[in-house]
Each structure stands twice: as C-alpha cells, then as structure tokens.
Image (tube, rainbow, N blue to C red):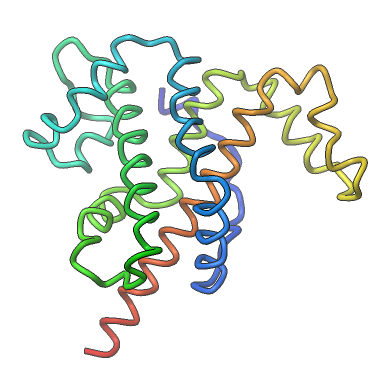
Length: 208
C-alpha cells in the first residue's frame, strides 16, 4: 500500500495567515455544506460497510488509542483493514475540523481552549500527510489514469470563461468531476486550517 502513494507533491496554495482567513471565510460561508456532503458522497462511492462501522466506532477507538496511532500504517485492529482504520480517522478528523472552524464565526480567537481538540488533530498529522492520504483514497476510486488525465487537463486550461468549464463538459472527465472538485476544496480548507492555527500558535508563543 505504501508503495502506491508516490504521487507528485503539490505546491502549497495557502501561504499566509491572511490568505488562510480569507479562504476559510469563503469556504465556510459558501461551501460548508458541499464539503460535508462530499464526505457522505465519498463514503457512498466507496461502498465499504466495514468503513461505515469504523466511523461509528471511532469515538470509542479514540479512548483506546492515540489519534496519531490510528492514522498510522502500523495499527492492527481485529476485523478491520489498516487502510480502513486510517480512512475512518481522516474523515472523522475532517468532519471535526469543519465543525470547529465553523465556530470561528462566533469565536475568532484561535488560541481559545475551545479549539484544543482541533489542535490535537493538527499535531497528530501534518497537513501534507492529511492531503496526501485523502488523495490516495480519492485515487483508489477514480483510478490513476483518470487522475493523471484530470491533472493534465487542468494544467492546460486557459482560465477564460470557456476553458474554465471545459472539464465539466468533457465526457471522459465528467464521471468524477464532483469528487475532484470536492477534493480541491478540501485541500484548500486543510491548508488554510493548518496555516491559520499554526501561525496563531507561533505568534502567541512569541508574545509570552
């Protein structure tokens, strides 16, 4: 499994706290439901009852194991595949991050103890690992050939009004376009969360 994850590392899109704040505001105002419903749609496409059961069990698993351990390639749980345990962890963490970040509207202070659970997630897995592991799950559904074609088409786009909608009108790419769009939004969301909270932590430490 590890050997199949040699995908090209993408450049970071969100590079500053201000960018992170802007992206989070945009996504949580306009795309929160899409991000949440995308998780359900992904689970539906995976068609894995054992994964669904693990998601239900996840609060109990967190009482037995550290999150970092649950997200590793090393933990063996009876009647569960290692990758299923990890995927359940990734999706559970994503749901929690969405929940906590939505509350930034009411409480914009990232150093509030209310966000300690969110920071526990961020310390348990790096942003690049999170994105990479989610990408692996997505590619397991769409296939490597589709993903590579999608990447090539996106890279070749000229962002005018006609070419911007080209992937959706391409029959070959249309099959998984919603899933790829969801993943792109999730990647932006994750980069923004890590940048916003990690930068806030550094600034707070520098003032103490």
